[in-house]
Length: 131
Picture 1 (cartoon, rainbow, N blue to C red):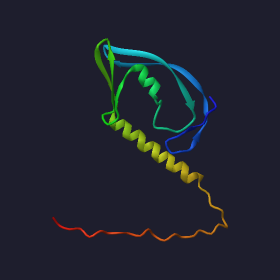
Picture 2: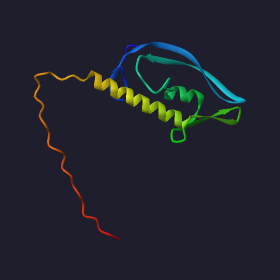
Picture 3: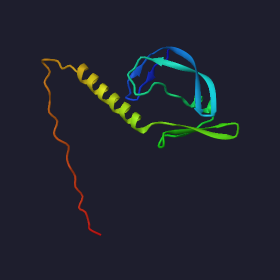
Picture 4: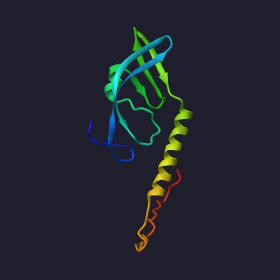
């Protein structure tokens, strides 16, 4: 695949290949397995994999990002896979910190550049009426 992808922060990412992998969704004793193609990229991310709409549709899942949960049917029974909010938050914080470090490391200023200070943004306050 030669098409560039765009990361969550908007920068262009080139794929380094594809991998066909089996995915197992399981809530014992209920489980479903499907095989899907993944695009492989070399990018720092809080995610190991991202399941796209095609894969989610293959599994016929219902997604709740708020609850970090997906539900899917297995032989007329509903199974679910839950995320861990604490782990997710820790991964996200670490990713943001590492991106900030990388951005600071890559910033360079021309020694002879003249930095123009911009005026502070104007602050507007509305009169509040007590009710």
